[in-house]
Amino acid sequence: MIDKLMSRRCLIEAAAGALLLTGCSSQDESSTKKVKKQDKIKKAEASNKAKHLRDKDELYGVYDDSGIVTMYLTVSRGNRSENTDHSWAEINTYSVYDYGDMGVTRYQVMGLLQQGDEDGPVAGEVGYGEEAPNATVQVRGQTSSNNSQKNYKVELKKGKGTWRQQRAIALNKHMGEGMRFRNKMAYDLIRGIPQMMGLRTQFVHLWVCDQTEKSNDTFEDYGLFTQVEQLNKTALKAHGLDKSGHLYKVNSFDFHRYEDTIKLADDPGYNQANFEGMLEIKGDSDHTKLIEMLDALNDESQKIDNVLDTYFDTENLVYWLAFQILTGNCDTQNRN
Image (cartoon, rainbow, N blue to C red; front, side, top):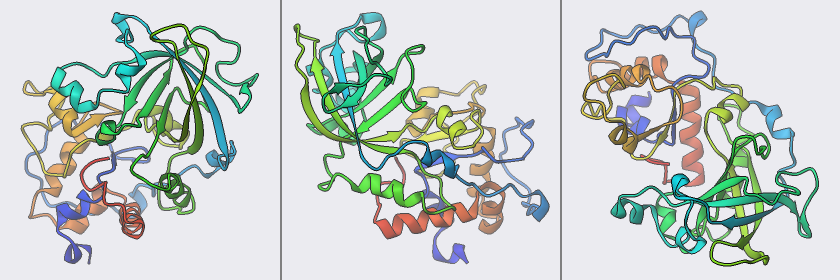
């Protein structure tokens, strides 16, 4: 049995990459009572069990992601109210840890994003023919923000169009990965495994024109990036899940209960900043399901098999674990 192979928390810790507590669940969501100590869990009848998590296969056939897309990004200064009155040099100087030391949010600049080919922007693609900024740009990532080559988050403004139905475009440099293709390859492999959920990816050749310091019309070659679909409400809907479901981005979390931090949003002692230091809220802010699961998982009187059957898609969990072991991925035990 699984509980003979790993301790109850270590098993779940290994699957801490993204915590999705709903989407295909049929459980009653009316309960808002915080659970301290649970009665023995009853296994759900087979006819009442939630369906297995399944990705939307046809989503991956809409665009050809086998080649390289060319993007042109023109960056310029904005204004203080939007935190965009900064230079491109500042954006590429500071890490997330520097911002923490300074006690400020990540600097941004204004950006004009245009898709094209190696000759320039192409008609019909996002940003074509525009001169005014259509996006904001900032460095993304945590540990990787220390690297000299940065990852970027380009967020298209509302009303300025989308790129492949996405407004938040994550461009990852993967500076520490010598081959620069293994992250995309991992997502491509996931697409062939029905029991796992994936994200859309695309290689991107990025050119940047820096107008934050002086007038400039020359684009500099920033090389190859891997675009990875931002996991948010838009992505949940695109992949056939409930866009208003419960979704958390794991910043630092190991499935302990942490009663002083993991609280309901209406609890007088709730501190969202502390909560999101562990789990960044990307979906519904009612944490009842999360707390119920953690109470059960940390209750040693409960059988782990019953906890898994009640709160997790065990098939998805086991396939996820096997995939990470086979690919040697050790960076998702309590983060990412």
